[in-house]
Image (tube, rainbow over all chains, first blue to last red; front, side, top):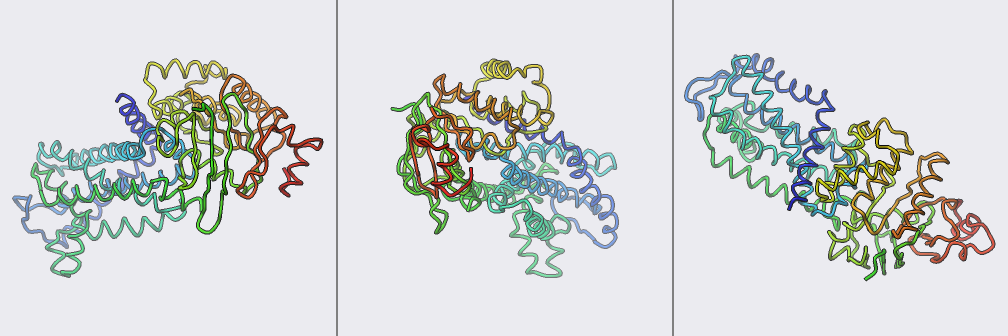
Length: 264
Length: 239
């Protein structure tokens, strides 16, 4: 069994080393949510009235409302970033090196997924720390209870990245994918506005938001930040993770997946 | 149970295009086998099939006696590969690159250090272990990839156009080194489109339009003409 553990440690370690060699990536990943938090939210708070909805027990400012959505946004961007680096790896050849390991492919992919999730989670905590410096805080226990939610959400969005990387053939096509995945996922969710607010303008949009797995990552994180578990969101995220992982493993299957189409 | 490489009745199609047609050959242990073919002959497809990046429903591949289809793990564990594209992480050190690969092959940690030390010693690169791969020249990177492919002590070594982008001296050095490895008992499959990398005593396979055109000792195949002329007249491609 030590071999399996060794593979996990090596792949996660490599992701981590690669990450710390890219300081720009770290800064970009941190600046993005901070811009939303300090500029967008500051401007938007006046326009949006929030009522008291669970898990909040009192009136909250818009900045507080938006924090879980921005945590999930970090996970989303990181999942896409890791997908991008998978496509890059494939063009560069290091993917071949990974896939010729004698360990089963699903395990190699899982290790890769976990590696990118670890990095996402570290970034979320860095973001939460900066927000806390500016007095946007959560209950102390929430910082602990949110961890499993972040890991699960990171795995789900990382699996989405794996799926995309198995279907996108070239690096150049990636910008389009980002636009078609990241923005609809983010805006059609409860990250920026509560669903009841969305329902006021369009019940259809509200229903689309409610079916968006990203909404459930946001809600899972939101409740866990207040040390509460939203079972519905948890179920959605777990099922989405399983489905996306299964598609990713299928996409990377040597008999039918991406390699065949790519070489064609 | 052969300890070399055996391919039988291998077929592969990309949609309507037949990329490989009934490819069969054997490379015993201790043999340097050159797989010569012009661009587009199907070499890359064959390499993808041998490394299980692709899987074919027709035909069989045995690596060191293990069926790649039925026992992929055992077969891949016996296979060392040097890919045509560079596969080093340029931002990681020489040591990190090697230990990453060793872990991917499930080598225990205590063995890994010894093997990496020994490999770097052989390459005369021990003092460069903590330099980034980016700082190595092309020849050193290739030699390192070769050393890496041998870390798990494979029975079969597959090199896909390993001399692409190297200067003449580095090319000659790596060709000679791999011939030595074959003399020591390794089964080597070396793909190339350059006839000057093939020695008369080598086992030669010529792949043309997805099929094996010639299979035998290089000297016997070329007869009295040079291998380059022979190759040109049989494939219509300059080599």
